[in-house]
Amino acid sequence: MKDRLLSRVRKQQDSGCWIWQGATKGMGYGYLTVGSRVDNSRRTALAHRESYAAFVGEIPKGMYVCHHCDIPACINPDHLFIGTNQDNVDDREMKGRNDTSGIKLRHESHPAAKLKWIDIRRIRTDVEVKGWTQQKIADEMGVSRSTIKDILHMRTWIPEPPTDTRG
Image (cartoon, rainbow, N blue to C red; front, side, top):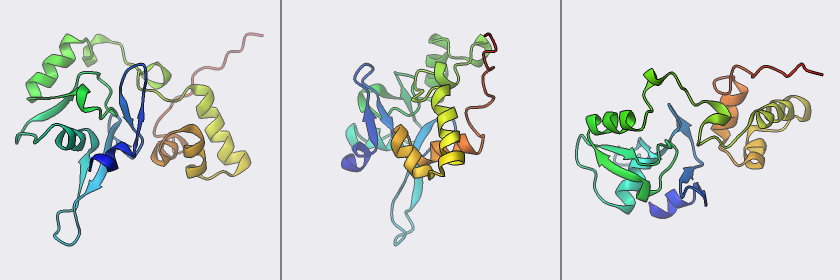
């Protein structure tokens, strides 16, 4: 499992985060399919939980795997810790990441953002004008195909920022 996980990360030198390059969902958490169809153990699993289990050890039943770095796509075991739901809430509050703060980091202002608005416009143009496939664009931009799909289907990176009309 360790090799499988490591084959799907981009290690960031500055933060030390191991950013998951596979499929993501929800708030940007990575996921993958584990188990076997033969014994009906096949399931979808969160990448950061699988990383913790593979590199650190068993996750006690009912416990969360939380992020010291606050980057949902990070699976670096050194950035992960075990906690209860309340531990996770307390960590969020202590770091000022609660929804009541009025500050929502989105798009390129989010610390885990790999893309900028200029990249989003390029992605949409490459499909429309050049006819590139989602996988070709994903490879070019260093993100997953599902990220490109979500951008193209307007599930992420909306609304567009205002265009600067100053001349």
